[in-house]
Amino acid sequence: MIHTKHIFVTGGVTSSLGKGIISASLAKLLQARGLKVSIQKLDPYINVDPGTLNPYEHGECFVTQDGAETDLDLGHYERFLDITTSQANNVTTGRVYQSVINKERRGDYLGKTVQVIPHITDEIKRRILLLGSKHKYDIVITEIGGTVGDIESLPYIEAVRQLKWELGQYNTLYIHLTLVPYLSASGELKTKPTQHSVKELLENGIQPDILVLRTEHELTDDIRKKVALFCNVDLESVVQSIDVSTIYEVPILMQEEKLDQIVLKKLNIVSKETPSLERWKKFLKKLKNPKYKVKIVLVGKYVELADSYKSINEAFIHAGAVNDCKVEVEYLHSEEIDQDNIEDLLKDIQGIVVAPGFGDRGINGKILAAKYARENNVPFLGICLGLQCAVIEFARNVLGMDKAHSTEMERKTPYPVIDLMEEQKGITEKGGTMRLGGYPCKIKKGSKVYNAYNTECIEERHRHRYEFNDKYLEDFEKAGFKAVGKNPETNLVEIMELANHKWFVGVQFHPEYRSTVINPHPLFVEFIKSAIS
Figure 1 (tube, rainbow, N blue to C red):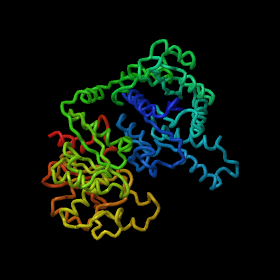
Figure 2 (tube, rainbow, N blue to C red):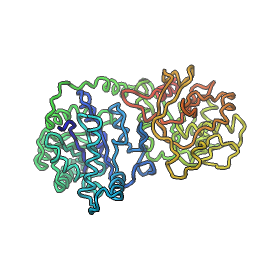
Figure 3 (cartoon, rainbow, N blue to C red):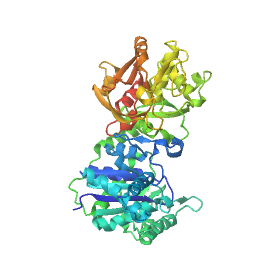
Figure 4 (tube, rainbow, N blue to C red):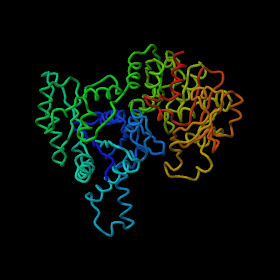
């Protein structure tokens, strides 16, 4: 007996139309009706996961609670739905092929010729269905990366085509997202790209049930009728997705377009509840009507692509709304900072965030930013490498350890204040030394961080190799830079806080991964509060 119903979201015409946001918005509406919903992303690239991908190439690598390095769209899913995703929510071609090849090597296929159909498509179907069967969801929304027509996406398209016949008409639904471009020269919205995109989908055996049309201008009834007629979709199933000032307006727009009602009707689901989005609307109202404004500088080395720090940016939006504040984030490339220009670069800002990252490129700029925040009483939040830079800066300029460094950057430093743990040092495989996923942390009462969390025991997500070197902890604490959060199992330092400073906190974990619309992260909330004051 089939319990979970499946919705498949595809895209056409161009990439980056917002399949993830549409998927998350629909999931939010269905969740608000009392249904148990989750989303998964199928990524066509052959990398096993985004863990080793350059942020310029793919944007941020989002880390789940169970330690999976995944696509940044999973961040949208968690922020919209206030749920915890896992490895099962992100499937890549690399992972699919790796699994099939491992089975072939073990002899699982009994010497048969291994082919894209049925072996690759069967593995894709198995992974799609796994999420729903394992967690007993009412609905699983599956977003297929890339656009229809991409050669990489063909096995996924074929797999979801087959599922329609295996699961049945009322247990599967296809939503196709396309673009209706506006030609300013003629003053017209053009539907031809959508028609061609649907034609491409039809050639692969899929007739979309619902069309979501991205547009800069309102769609007329005539345009909707034309699209419905030429794409073989009923008129009510042509849904407009007009450009908005913030992605958090999309669920409200989709509700106005009755997307959730259309989906329930086509899946033959009777919903007893009317969706209530009061908390969401309250958040939007505060977001759009701020009383205060602060300028925060984010010091990083991938600042040319904002998606490299997607979760941090969204955490600022959540925290800003709580504080009735518009947070203006100014991106500053750490390689551009030096001793001569730092005063001019940072003189007009109300808070400094030193962002996470790997490698020594731009490290000196991050260290100088931490120094500026410490010496000028500017609210500071150091995330992962940001904490490590604050530790290096403090060791050099307060403790007199002139050449203190991390052994990641300088293997022969006389003061390895940041170092690998002993059990990590013999591992050479990249990623093998990583601390990934959720780890517990115990916070000292009376600290600013404790006041932020209002609890002693927390769990946060990590993505790093190097740790604070306990050998130097006593020196740091005597000088006022205190370890106020430690892992209770390993005693590793997780949080450091500077005494006699307005708000100076460094964390070894990534708090941004856990910030959602409904539950903004307390560290970002307190950081923005201190920046306002």
